[in-house]
Length: 129
Image (tube, rainbow, N blue to C red; front, side, top):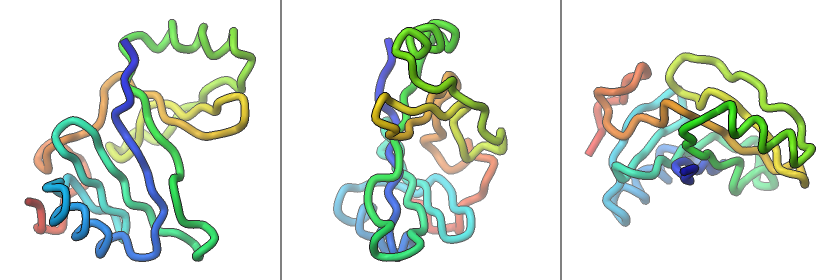
């Protein structure tokens, strides 16, 4: 059954926002890539992305974990939305990106997202916890 497992927020200061989410909601750091910080509560992942300006802040996209990508592709085709496309496979991204009928972006993954620092291909800065 498909399940929401990932949110990405664009913010002015991702490292500071990471400290907020860690201190306030006990999230732990999974990885960093430049100023992008990846957090998890062990179930849902939160990617804090660098915003380009104040007007660029807010929810950027979300991600679904699915069991069967082919079935998901069929459902997307029936919905007459653009075909999902592959994303880079370096450990930071879901396998595919797609859009809903209004153009809102979302990720689709079969493998899921890392929930612990030692699972990731992108090392943390050493501030996990």
